[in-house]
Image 1: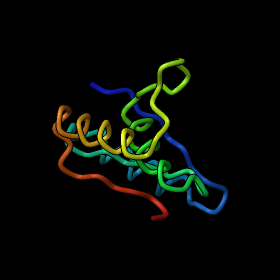
Image 2: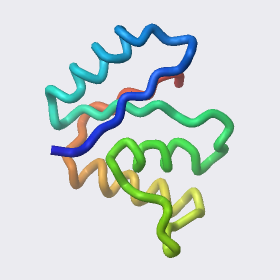
Image 3: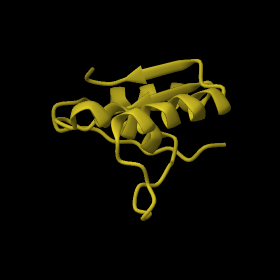
Image 4: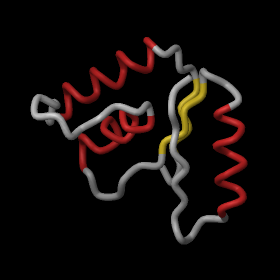
Length: 89
């Protein structure tokens, strides 16, 4: 099972966020992403990869948006994620 983190903003009801993440954890084909504001084109791909537990502190980590999107797509398919929930989209 993938490791997941629960992140709630100050303007969110923590109980609702816990409920959403609990529902997602119950199924391996669902992923919940909380995007980082202001990241531009690479932001959502980076956030999706982080939600899947991928690391970005390694020296050879790709930085360009096209490569990050391709990697996010590859991992979503590999992990058979069929439902992607983006909070605050």
